[in-house]
Every structure is written in structure tokens, then in C-alpha cells.
Image (cartoon, rainbow, N blue to C red; front, side, top):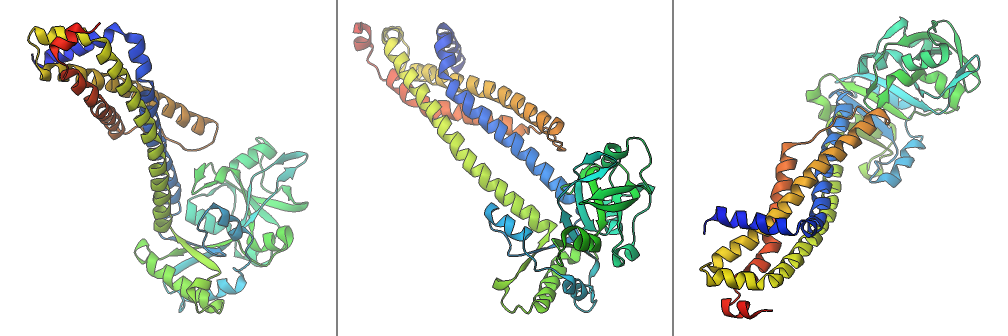
Length: 414
């Protein structure tokens, strides 16, 4: 008997008990669907994050206050630390300290909303330099101008707003020259940014940018910065510049032991490596959960195949009496197990693709994320390969048991 004959007989046998076959592969379907979604959504998340980080520019270096967080519970410490102050700007701007640094901008995050004549909107409010934001992130005014260094030095009550903020507060009217309120303080709108959308984790259509000195003095009443954004002369010198920044700030803070740093430096490459490490750990954890589901599904298939072998004992005896070899019986039952798991794998791939597409659509439409549906060919090949492997591993024992039955004893079985 050829392999093709064994394959045809396996298909015929499975067709006799379609309902049982369908229920048997349920565990495999769930496991493969989970693998497909994990790979698709994981790849989509990685692409989204890397694209957002890429918007920073490879030469961007960010300095944040507090100890570098080692987990989610530490993130709050950086928001309330007051270790970055005006003296740090002065140290960083000295060319002899950090010779390959070309731009330095402190940033302040201001919680709250803005209002105009009864209309209220909750944007992302930043204290910083409008010119730096424009150059660093490629956002430019379509109406009015950007405030300049003199506004920063003078703590001017001026603001640059995003296109969405203009639409929400002013409709189709011009916004420049009009006054908005932030925390009960009036700010004159001097410019409106063109539509830019999401980049580097900031939606520039929803921003309000005011001078950082104004934000410190009139909006928050603090003398520190939430972060300092800097740029090196080129991506090639980022690592060296980051080390110079660390040395300079340690001098400014009188720190001799790096373990006692009250700040940390973030580069694009460093963030990428951290993200990939986190995604890798998450994938490993989810893979272990999926593996358990596949093992459970495989055990279910083995049990059903053992029941099938018992039910078809006389059939096995008859086939052997007519000349079928142990190999023929083994191949038939092994093919049945592989066909079951492969069918489960195929259904899992289709469901995984559909669910992943639905998740990507929902995240893009309702979550406001630039999420792209990704379904790698490697995921499909892996799904089919894993499902077939489960069939081989968990189908081999029942197949061997069927093949080793004595034809005489099998024909006597009632």
C-alpha cells in the first residue's frame, strides 16, 4: 500500500465521524489561533513603537529626572523628581562639556484643559521651545508664527496650538491673535501648526505649546523640568555624546558614584533595545501559555485516536488478514492524527488572521493609533508546522498500538 492510499483511507475514516473530528481539533484551533494573533499583534506593536521612536531622530538624546525605572512601578518616580534644573541647562550648553551637542530644550508637561468663550478642550500641553519642536519633529505653522527665544526669556503668555485644538475651540475661524485660557491664565495664540498627526508618541494636532519658563512660573509653580531633550551633531556620535552628558550632569549634581545618579539618559537605540527585550519576554511568556493549550489539545487527540483504535479493532484485524502490513496500519492512523491537527491548524490560521485584522482595525479606528495589520508568512508556516508536529507526536502512540494488534485477536474482538 502506498502513502497516497494510506492518506485516502485516513480521509475516508475521518469523514465518517465528522462531528467528533471537529470537536477533537478544538484545542488545536484555539492554540494555533493564539499563536497567529500573538505573532501578528506583536509584530504590529513592534512596528508601531519603532516607527514612533524613529520619529525622534537617531541623533536625539533625552534626559529624564530620577533613577532609571526598572519596571512599571518605578515610572511614577520620574514624573515627580525635581533633579533637572536651570543649572543643568547651563552646564550642557557649555561647548567644552559636551562638544557634539547642538540643541538643548527643557520640557514641561502641564495637565489641564484649554478654553475659549465657553468652548473647552483637553489637549496635550507642553512647556518648551516651539522652534525646537518644529525642527526636531518636522511640524510647522500653517497660520501665524512660532514664539521665539525672547518670549522664553520674558516668560511671555503666548501659545502655539495644533490644528485639532484650533478646530475644537475656533471652528473654521482664525485663531491667531485670540486669547485662550489655561489654568485661568490668558495666553495669546501666535501660531497654529499644520496637520501632522501622531509622531514620537505625541499627537501634534492636539498640542498646545507655551514657553517652558511661562509653564514653570505661571502654570505649575516649579523650578525644575520634566525632561531635557537634546540633539547630537550626528547619529554616529550619539553614544559618545550621551556619555559626555552623563559626566557633565554628575559634575553639576556633585555625584561621584554612578549608582547614585538622580537622572538617566535615553537614546533611540537604547529605547529600541528595551522595547525588543520587553516584547521578547512577553512573547516567551505567551508562548508558554500557548504551548500548554497545544499539549492539552494534543492529549485530546491522542485519547480520541486510542478510542478510535479500540472501536476499529475488527477493521484492523480484517485488513491485516487481507495482507495489510504493520506499516500500512501505522501510516493510516498516523495520517489521521496529522490530518486532524493540520485541519485544526488551518482553521486556527484563518481565525487568527481574522481576529488580528479586527484588532488592528479597532486600534486604528477607535484607539487613534497608526496601527498596521501585519500577518507574516512565517506565522502561517509556523502554524501549519506546529499543528502537524502535534499530530505526529500525539498520534504516534495510538498508531503504533493499532499497528501492533494481532490479526487473530483483533478478529475475535466483539
